[in-house]
Image 1 (cartoon, rainbow, N blue to C red):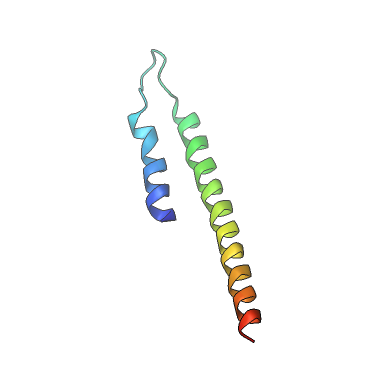
Image 2 (image 1 turned 30 degrees about the horizontal axis):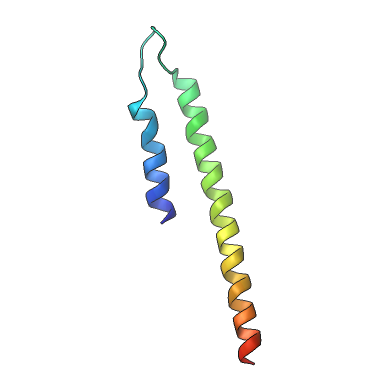
Length: 63
């Protein structure tokens, strides 16, 4: 699911207006892309930790 969300979020700068008359600069678009990348890494790490914790708890219940 995270690759799909990442692809959609990375496609957002393609929709932004460009040009010298008030458009989004390339540097701002790159900052956005790297922030999205960092956010995806953090969310994936948290989800991985939650899944591992749930699996360990389930194994302890089973015995």
